Length: 306
Ligand code: 5RP
Image 1 (cartoon, rainbow, N blue to C red):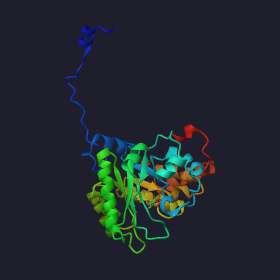
Image 2: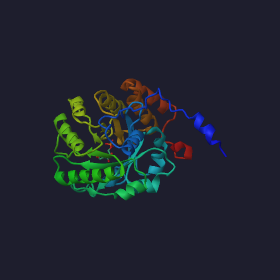
Image 3: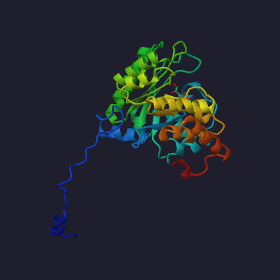
Image 4: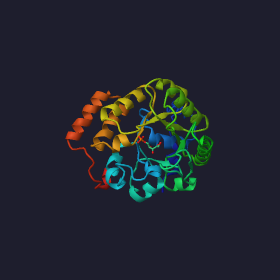
């Protein structure tokens, strides 16, 4: 049994050291509760407040998207290179091994298909189920200017409220209808509305003109979608410009998993986002990793998943 007197004598309260009380550095997040910050810190690296999220949720409205026909084969090998995985609960439970240690951003709205009006969504996950799969954030589509704008904003509010009750942050995704221009005026409007209504971070598109103002006008971090598959150099340039102009990273899907060498591409994207590499140098990295065989090897070992 320990000697109580001795323990007392050894106590050290470091009376000359003020208790550490650092502000949480992620944009607009310092007033959040501990659990929210802790989950956000799993997604956005505490070193640079940036993230490379891998988006593989496309099946929720467009079925077996090219590159996602077999998530177990093509996506598992990419997980070690992603900071977070954006995915539906169905795909998560059926194809992703629970041993992964990367945070999950759970697609939480749905209810339409590419055959119908895209903005016609509803909340598609109970908060209890999001907790059950250990989601680090909830993702909800918001269609500003869309046919179902009002309902999609309602979905955002509902998910933010549920997430706040459980300390789970919400990512709003600005869905842009075909009839709307993805320009700075529109993106500035859409991202700001999402943040004002409580989104903790927002996924949006990059625009050539005025993106810096879009990012500055949004009080929470922005991550950019990749959009349709581009030549690799163009996708890297877009990521570079976006982070240079204020984005906190990417939530990229097709421009990674539809590449000839997805594993090489996600590493090149990481170099841009986390090491501020130029698109040219990142493209060289892509080519050299590609020629060294960093393709889309099968998911073979559990250690590959961490
Ligand atoms: C729809 C989505 C996606 O399903 C997906 O995340 C888009 O990623 P990318 O454009 O990079 O393929 O959010 O709006």
